[in-house]
Length: 308
Image 1 (cartoon, one colour):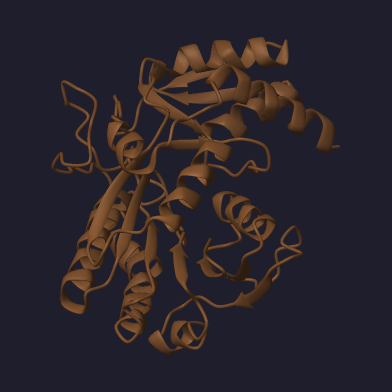
Image 2 (tube, one colour):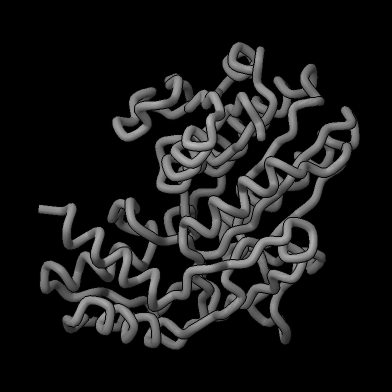
């Protein structure tokens, strides 16, 4: 087990969930967020930083034996027309982190990229890690650039890195934020009796993975880092469904009706995302355990019992 883990981007949904799991395992977690105060992370050492300079990160690396990089500030939709923002808010902090790691190459890095934003929507079979990326959005392009920078760091400094490409992650604890996550948005609309705006006709194929399954994959990756190189691992359920099917499952989970307003689709959104997870099974012995219908039921129960 990793005993001292630095998590950059601890304030988000995935970051909070991972920090709690690491703390539960007994790890000392240094949790870095913009605010430096995430109320639910009571058993971590918290720091406020935007990691804009290598020195900001280097000051935190002293006793660290693994680094997880989750910090991100955009989605495919929010990045539309804003390529420079991707450089300043997403790439620059990562590059500062890599520069700091140049003097600490023995610290394995786990970086969270994206599956839905970088794979070719025209792929005939489910996308695997060896497929050439074809991002549609600036958000996806920045993720591809980040992966290449990480690869260059591992080759120059004999570093070790795992790139995780998650699909759409959902589950209890995910805040409803405009543009970030269809699951909390649609369940929130159901709960309030509001109408959900749907980009396109609802036929888009997406993959959804429950948060606990992603955390388990990440913990497995931390325990078995690659030896002095970079590897890329898809984190997904391996079972894509159409948006309209997702809406039906949400209605079943909640016992309520989801009202919808279909509007013109956006060019930044992929129409089809199907993801192969054979490699994760092979190298980590990992398998998703929570089905989509069960995950939606758990998420609805959490939302219905914890929100006023």
